[in-house]
Length: 181
Image 1 (tube, rainbow, N blue to C red):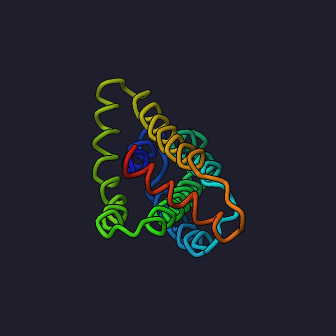
Image 2: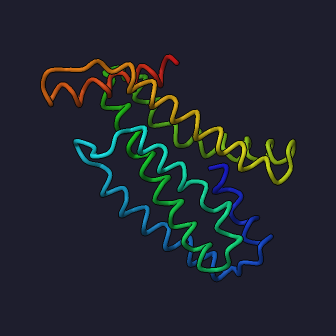
């Protein structure tokens, strides 16, 4: 959300018209909805850490995309929506499914709203402290921290004997990594 909240400012700085911004947001929303349907599978195809890295790269797209003109900006916003939707659906689904604790599941449902509030604040503070470099640095740090959490959860997963248990183990460790460290 720290990048999303600054995309309007980036578009203004790089002279992207309001019409193009509107088209980009509309196309990004449609792409995000389609992504949500595609990602909410029972058994994920891509490991969580790979999902995090790919989604993280997509989340940074608007920072560079606005410099490339109208089409690059539209593509960057569509990529941003694809990445943000995919990682939110993927990680919140894994974490919620891994825990039987009702309080933890409620916490998971609140994390998107928390990110919508904390992200712009952190992005604003980083920009205030470091200037134009602050936003990409803080966004990259947040993505690295998320990927580390996914990696720790995957590393802590114990190998299992059958496929059904194998899909459950990493999810349990993901819930532990998210909730305890």
